[in-house]
Length: 125
Image 1 (tube, rainbow, N blue to C red):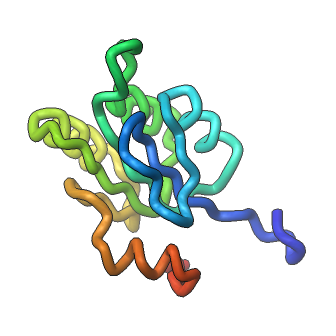
Image 2 (image 1 turned 45 degrees about the vertical axis):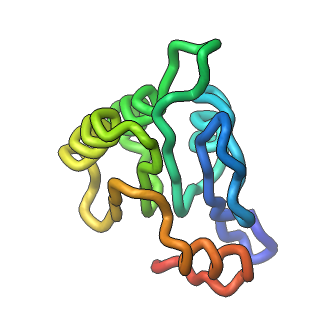
């Protein structure tokens, strides 16, 4: 909670290789990502699918957790480079997402990343 008693909103970036954009909290694996989703109100969540050779868990595991728990961020981007994984994750989320949640099957646009990095991004209520 911030000083006004409002929940702190964070942005989460799930990826094991790509650099985390400024203004985001990095989750390198499924467990870290789910912990952040449990502990914080997440505004923007950006998901990779493949998370390294040492784990069987993928971004789809986060998607399944979101749909089972019904705990959705305001916006989800799917930035995986695997077209088939992107389609599967998108379709699963699309059928379960609540009204008002935004869902995009691509990386976060550069202008939005710039706004977040500069602190000028304003989340929609």
